[in-house]
Length: 452
Image (cartoon, rainbow, N blue to C red; front, side, top):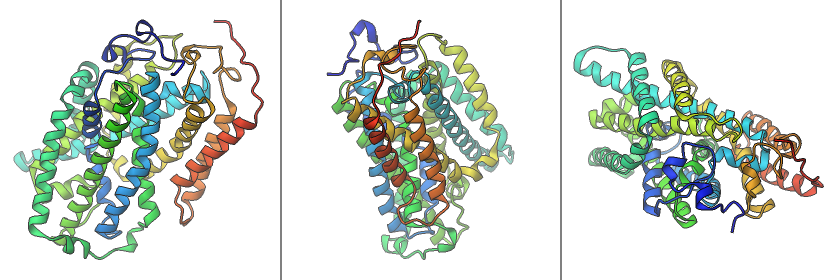
C-alpha cells in the first residue's frame, strides 16, 4: 500500500473536478473507459501520417512488423509510468518530483509543455490543411493558415470549457473514426491484394532502415507517456489502468500507423505521387470521409493535449497556486499563434527525435526511482512545496539531472551514427542503469527541511 494513499478528503472525492487543481485524485473509471480514452486519443492524424513515412522506404509488410514491435516496446514504458499515476493519483509531471526534486520538477514540466505545445501546433496545422482542402474543393477558396488557426481556436475553447465533455464523447468519436478507417481498408483491399502491397519495391534512397523506424514508433509512445499518468490516474484500479491503457494505446497506434502505411501503399500502386506525412496525398485518394476522420481526431486529441499543458503547469507547486482559466487562456493563445507556423511540418521527424532525446531518459529515471529505489511507494512529502525527503539539494536531485543530460547528449551522439541498436533503446538502458547505480552508490544525506 502506497504511503500516498491519502484519505478521500485529502485527495478529493471527484476526479474530474480535482483534475483541474494541484494534488492527487481518486480514479473511478473502468478498464473499458480507460481503453476507450486511449483508443480515441491516439486515433489521430499524426499517428496515421507517421505510418505513411515508412513505405516505400521499407516494404509494407516489414513496416507493419516494426510498427507492432515498436508499439509494444513503447507501450511498456507508457503503462509503467501511467500505473504510478493510478497508484498515487498524481499527474506525470508531479511525479517527477520524486526523482528530480520539488524544484527540479519545474524543469521537466517546462520541457513537457514545450513538447505538448509542439504537438498541438502540428495537429492543428494538419487539421487546417485538411479543412482547407475540403473548402477549396467545394468553393475554390484556400487559406491553410486561416483554417489552422480556426481549428486551434475550436480546440482551445473545448479545452477550457469542454474537456470533461470531450472525455465523455471520445468513445463515440473513436467509433466514428474506426468506421472511417474500416472504409479506407475496404477500399484498399477491394482494389489490391496483400501480395500486391507486399510486392511494392523498397526505396533505400528515402533513408529509412529497421532501427530508424523502430525509434520513430517508440518515440511516438514516449510522446504520449507525458500524459499517461494524467489519463491513468482516473482509473479506479491498477488493473483498469494497466490493461485499459495497454490495450487502448497499442490497438490505436497499430491501427493508425498500419492504416497510414497501407494508404500510402495504395497511392503508390495507383501510380500517384507518394508524399509521406502529407494529409492531402491520402485524402485526395480516399475522399472526404478520411478528411472528416482527420478533423475529428485532431479536435478530440488536441483538446486533451492543450488541457494536459494546463494541467502540467497547475500541478507544479502547492505554494503558488495558479488558477485554471487564466493559465488556460495564456497557453491557448500561444497554441493558436503557433498554429500558423505551417513550415513546422517539414521538421516533424526532427521533432520526434527531440521528444525521444528529452524524455526517454526522464521516464527511465522515473521508473527506477518509483519501482526500484522507492519500492512502489512515494511518501506524501511529494505534495510539499519545500522540505521533506524530496527536497534533496535545495530542491534538486543532481544525480537525476546528470543522468538526464548525459542521456540527452547520448541520444544526439547515437543519432549521428549508423548504429544497429538505434537510439531509443540504448538511451533508455543507459539512463536506467546509470540512475539506479548512481543513486544506490550515493550515501543519501538526511533531507534538509526548509522553512515554509
